[in-house]
Length: 121
Image 1 (cartoon, rainbow, N blue to C red):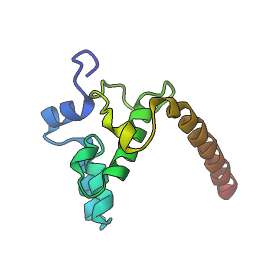
Image 2 (tube, helix red, strand yellow):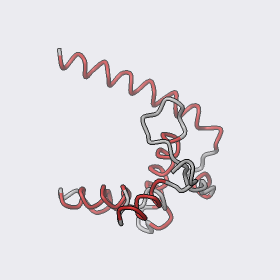
Image 3 (cartoon, rainbow, N blue to C red):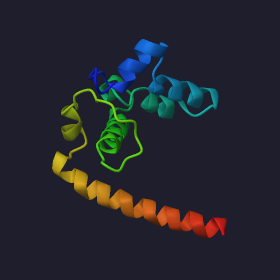
Image 4 (cartoon, rainbow, N blue to C red):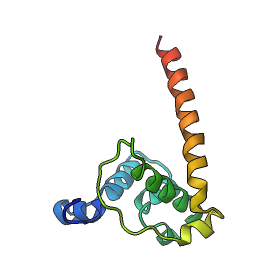
């Protein structure tokens, strides 16, 4: 995908006829997860298509963007579609907020790891 410069979800659809957002949404729906949640998963690459919950769809879109752009991430390296700049205004945020978000999330993940290690002892 990197050589062809095709975003992962487009390549998945082209090769498999379905992408990871669609698979995730189908699984959540099968597991009787409420529709508002699986719709956010379904549209996490196109948050403004989710007319019923654009705000939360934008949050997941931004989270996905941050994950895919971290050097030490566990995401598949693949080109992303161009970032939808409307997300910033919809969330009342800016790109300068990303370092703070990453710091806060990193701290919370470290705490979660500690709690899980204690619980597994």
